[in-house]
Structures are given as structure tokens and as C-alpha cells.
Image (cartoon, rainbow, N blue to C red; front, top):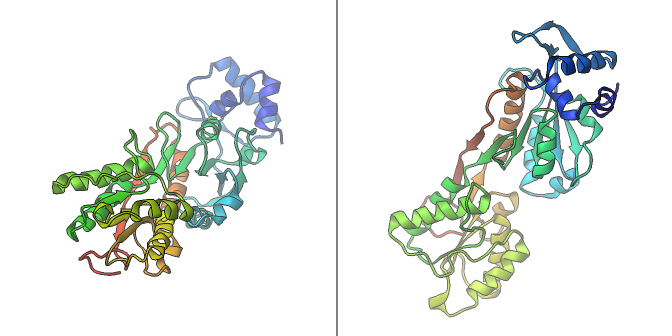
Length: 345
């Protein structure tokens, strides 16, 4: 079967125009549409001869929909404690009983690194889910098939996004720290930014908790960005190896960063949680086995994946509906590293 690129070359139109014809879009003139449809038929693309209510042919519904899970590099995703469960849950979400009894899905893995051309595998897919995708390839995918992004939402692109409510999770975590008497709280994964990115949400949620409690932010309230254990260790040493009166009594940031900070506290002979409380974000598996166990804001990674697959199947049926941002709840999980009054889990 010819690729969409080959059909575009034959008909003298762009790939995005071919995609618009396939999806029955209004913004293609009648002559161009008919030329493209004739070439698609010659290339044996499956088209329903019966017109839709708008008078255009529609794609014949397959018994099983094919959804691509697109990552820049699947091997890297599988090694990441946060993204690996999302990928595995998305792969498992297909099948005849996916989406609560709706049409099932065949899930395929597709690597698309950087600015390289679109993989040929997308030609036979009905929709795509991206994990860690860049805005450029998301834009390119959405010109061909419906797209759902996981753990991010990019306004202005024609793609739905499924994201955790980090803002509410940060608010809950910092509220618990305040209830335990912590006022010198340092954020190691946050920044005052516009939009709904991870750093901005963590900052907004934490700052709202402080403001409602009438607490002035600690002088090192936003301490930087610690995304790895090494970053967390270096930042932890910098923040904690100071006189007691200048030292934060609580650190809040990514799980990876907090695991590094936990080691820094150990090396400085600071007791956790007696002298220092630590709270992470993401609930990666390693945090459940650290000593002490890491308190965290849990992100339901399996729910992110399932919702993304359900949305992709829905989007195939309703391609013209407005794109949206789907927000899933986060949950503060109290464990040993955070000396709050909350019940231990």
C-alpha cells in the first residue's frame, strides 16, 4: 500500500490535505477532495462508498482500532520509574474490553526521535498517544490522526491532554506540612511561571497553601530544580549544611530529588523526620523502599494511561469535537519521611 507521502506526491497536495480528506474535514475544495479520493481508492485505502451526512465519504470502521504509542525512545521510557508504568499500562489497555466495553484497540509502539520524518507505521494507525513527545512531532502527528498527550497539555495544538492535578497535590502536601508546624519549607522542583507546567503547578499549589495559612514563604522557598537523585543530593547539601536557624525544616520536590536529599541529610547526620521532613511527587516504586519510606504526592500512572486510550478511541469517533485538557486527581500519601499528624500509610 502506498504511504500518505507517496499519495501526496502523486496528487500534488500536502500530507495534511490527504489527512483532512481522510477525516472528512470541511476545508478542502471539492475538486481536490475528489482527486485525492480517487488516488486513495487506487491505493486500496478502505473508504466507505456511502457518504456521511455532510456528503463526504468516511473511513470504514475497523473491527479493531490501531493506536500508536509514540515516544522519542521507548527504551529510555522503559527505564524511567515514572513513565515506564504509564507505557506498560497503555500497552495493556487495548483489547476487546478496553474503554469500558467500547471498541477495543491494538496498541503498537512507535519511536519518533527529534525532528526526523514521520515513521511509516503511523500510516496504518487510527490515533496516537504520546509519552514525552515534543511539540513539533505532536503537531505533525495531529495533522494526520487524532493525538492524546500524556502528562502534558500543549495549548494551541490540536491534541487532547491527560494530566495529573499537581497543583491540588502540592496544596494538600504543603497543608499537611504546615499542620505539623513546618514553616521553613523549600521547594526543590518548582518555579513561579505562567501556564500549567509541572514546576508552575507545584509552585502555585504550595504558595496557595502558605497564603491561606498566613505563612510568609521561607527565604529559599524556591530552591531550584532537582530532577535526579544527584541533583537532590547537591541541592540538599547546599540547603542543609548551614546553621540551624537558616535551615529549612521541610523539603518538597520530585521523588527522585527527595531520594538524593535523603542521602544528603544522612551524610549531614540530620534525622528524618525528627529534624527534617521530606515529601516527594510521583510515588515512584523506589520511594516505597527507602529508609525512611518517602512521603509523596501520588500520581495514578495507570489511570493516566487508561484515560488516554479511552480518549483516543473517543476522538476517533468524534474528530471534530473541541480538544480539551483532562485532569486526574493526585493524592498525598503519608509515610515515614514526613513527621505530620496525618495517619501513616
